[in-house]
Length: 282
View (cartoon, rainbow, N blue to C red):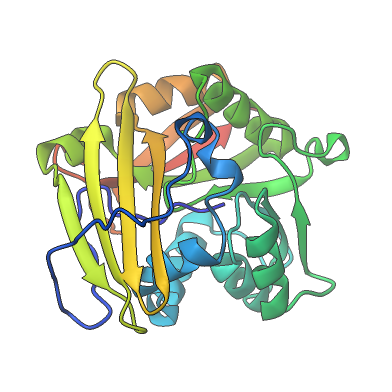
């Protein structure tokens, strides 16, 4: 399950057009009770349609090149991409010679990932990132958590639990690469509304709100397209670099470097995304 959204509202448009979004009363709406566990149903074909403008092979290759540069690992090193989504990064890392496992809770995204290809050095499985396989203790040279795939759960203790699981499956001295929204930067450039069109003409509109006490960024999306009308809501708990570094330290992971997204410049007060490099203590 991946959440590849620019939380500050900046994103590529499929055809460059922006329109005002409507909200017909006939729209399909998920019940409020589903919001706390939104991640259980959100990552499906609709998710792939909604974020289509951000799925770009050339961009994926640039990101993987940057990840490889940061990792500095030899061919054959064991990597875990968790959650792996539709396998955009895992597939390219396996092509580059790494031994890759991809884990995601979403059955539709795992199916899409497997359709890209799997084999001896690229395996996918469905699992909850709070409970990775017990046999994986000390298995991986690196764990990748990319594209704001963190902060999904209603209880913040579950976020800490995810980091402890990442630390458990890393070998001593192994590396966690964490990429996602930076609360400081998102708030500095907060965009409450955004809209774009996908290749098939579907209009996607989003309204965002932020609760400073819980740290949740809530995103309400509506789609209007050929034979399609739907509303859905998801939310993500955002962290500052300081908060996340403290959580990682508590899990036995020491942040050694912090970058402004996939760039080589350091994270700053107005960075909408951050990429942290953390190492498991020996």
